Length: 264
Length: 369
Figure 1 (cartoon, rainbow over the protein chains, first blue to last red):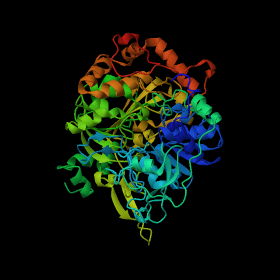
Figure 2 (figure 1 turned 90 degrees about the horizontal axis):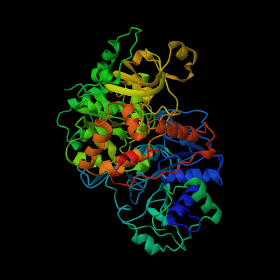
Figure 3 (figure 1 turned 30 degrees about the vertical axis):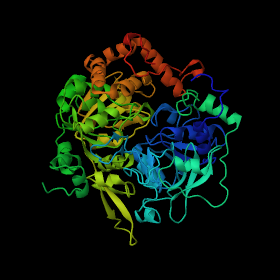
Figure 4 (figure 1 turned 180 degrees about the vertical axis):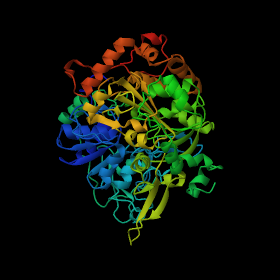
């Protein structure tokens, strides 16, 4: 992608930074494929060098280095003290050894339910069949704190997902607990426009902070359901420093696989 | 009919009219009987890949995808399955990345899904097309974790396990094997998902080394391979190298699969190409881009892709010639060792030109590392 150093910050870089900040040093963090990987590696190279990264293939706690190209690739297990199996790695979350999990989505609804299965009305004849669950459902079912990341548009932020791959707050209220699911559910959603949390009673998605240059109305325009507006002024999302941007561009994602936008 | 009680809503939603197609995957008695009847003799089980696939992969079998997407996966063996034109296979794996290559050729008719596609290489557009065309039928939807639990339950010798996964999701409505129940040890309401032990018919697992009886050793993520080895009715081990039994006995730390499970041992150097093999070779990045950005686009493209890479070669050596021959092997080993921190990587450059869509005018000049 050439030299990006003279370019202004793009929304994907901001997204990676916001996500990385959700990680505290010394935490055990479960990482899905794509943008979550960028955040995990960025956190490790900046404010959280002592985190343990866990991946679904059984890989965990690799030596620090470049971005993995697969959650089973060498960068997820290079010089690991121990490499396990898939069933064991999910067992670690169930048993309370994982602090946070980071997940992507193709579609999300107002209760934080995630769809990575299909777009369309007929499961057997979908418009687009997507990946299916992978570890997405496991993380959403088991993790104590779930952080969701993806791009925001009215097509992706829908009133009801076409298929619930990974339950968030299901139908809102206490329906997540009633379904027998563990943990606090989706705590944070990060997009290129804003950061969201969920209103404590109804469990409906609420704006927590807006990225620079994004108004609530603009954010609402890019959303297919009615967002909850918090009382008072909505904070502006903190942007990464020039130094952090350099780290993203040079050390974390030098090929710009996840954090570059054509033309930006 | 009648032996199993499937999740009826899922059977209905999936429009499965004859549930006998679902039975063998969870038929423990059948698997146990099969295991009991396996040849116990401490014999040399070596044979060629062609022989192993001909003898142990049968039409209608439930087959697994080993490794993880493109990490230590028996891709060269799957291509042999395609060349031998096996029919109506059920594919049951976590992930199912390499399933797609088997659908168009008519080899894989049914799928037990957990994950289709190849991470950031892209969405499996071929699967969507074949699903709509009725060339593949979904038999069940799983998460990685719950399918892993099904394999693990089989390996551990359990009828099934109770899981906290899949609850509240729509997969419950599309998986005939899973039922939501009340946790019998709790007095308060506590829904759990019952996941049965699952028993595939045939697995092909690629390892670093095996002795001629099938005691097999590998390193890197095990994913589901150890569990699958204990569950599957028939097991083909393909190995980068065959080592003496004394080597296995004296260096047994990495041994993961005991010979008693194994039906056939195939010496198959580069058996995971074009995927990555820990310590041995890197994945052929442009190959995967070509598969997903060119091959998956249309049936026509897919045919061309398979003709060049699968039907146009007779074995992994001819495949590697197309990737770049011995230079590809050397570069590829260098890259994987660098990423694993097993060589001095200061001079190793991971930059490369991504493959972008059209079949090159002269593919022989294309670089795959």
